[in-house]
Length: 97
Image 1: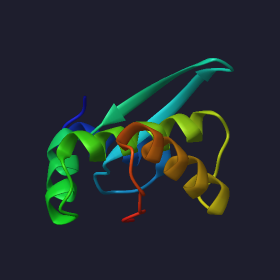
Image 2: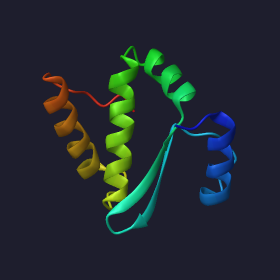
Image 3: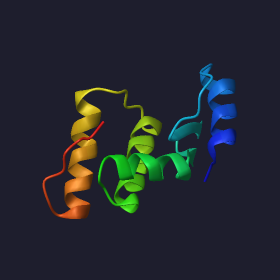
Image 4: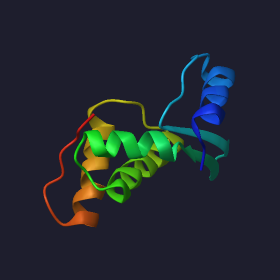
């Protein structure tokens, strides 16, 4: 689990973006990867979205896993995120991003 300074450094080094981020994923091989979640930022974003922190961090993990499986931002990714969240939380899921 990452904090703001670590996430900012990783984001700058690997994505050339000079700001912190809520989650980063790195593919290590076809079947392995690393996911870094910025818990302080995720907590702030969850509160802003009026969601439980656990639910929001679950979303971030799913989002990252989909990136590791080759998904890019877009409708296909949103659909897969929604499907997982609906199964996990048993209600209609909405994308707050």
